[in-house]
Image (cartoon, rainbow, N blue to C red; front, top):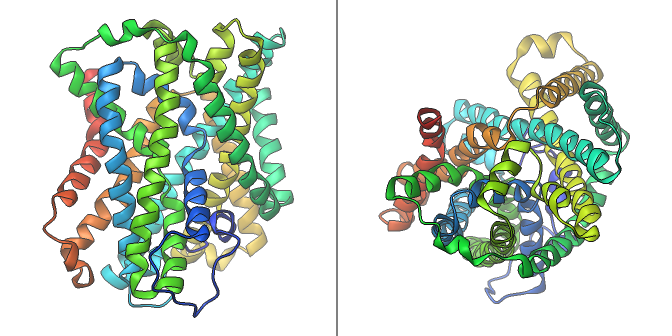
Length: 437
């Protein structure tokens, strides 16, 4: 993607280290080590702090709605990301990323709108991480270290300033480091999933909501699932790289890699969710949601195991910090692109250094303000994160399929209807939550 959307550093963080040089074209569709590298990169893009909040929402309605959601999220993840990769792969402009493709298909005005949508998809996530890092550290200080809570304005300000200082000191290096934090994080979370198995309570299978409650639970949980399984920030450069390597076979190769990525995500993420849900009672899940803490921090507070008590919050901290870096960079550079390219008075009056300082101040003050206010993280995901991601990832590519001649080969398929319905459900879930509340 262009720098003003997610940043070249974000691109570097997800690009495999052995990406082929320009001009190398291969017609082979057999699985290669390069494909495995891409699969792991996309997996790492998706797995972040979102998984730490998913069990509270996905499991609050019981086992059976969660089972249906598990059946749905696999094809939802694969088909939506496949649609976005095909959207980019169909471009006739060599090396064109998603914003250039939008301009090619729909015009300059739509390209600007997509830039705004990408910023609005990333920025609320930065606010979410400001809230969650404050809650995680405060809980660890109180419950594990036996300390008194610091004033929230002081603790949140220090944590956010510290994370931003690291970014200002060395953005590219930090993203390279945090890229490698994903894999030990994955290993520990897998271990946690298995570690909780002896605590599973099978009486959760006896909890069956009414039909209306069942569908309502599924509806309001879809945005959180979309948020937790989302790896769309990497799809643009993923598609560009495959076009350079595979030429006309790029879309087919992308389909293969994205299918395996979706299967890997489904198995790993949902094992963690099921393990947490079965190890906790509905009352505990509700309390965890009300506490506004990552699931591992809540487990650390209620579990007798010293391992969970200390490792859980540390894992949550690492996941939140590593996710904050990439999303903060994407949001700041997205805002810089909007300000410098779409707001003429900013271009005329501000130097590049002054613009950077102004954006940093804006980000610090707004993230700090959100952390002090401590809004519900899951509500923010339901209201902001999931719906905006769905607009870009689910609906825009499907609209292009029926609008753009280059994509007409993909028309008339049931999978298109499935993706459209899933996207609309995510975007409208906030209205259901509002009327229920």
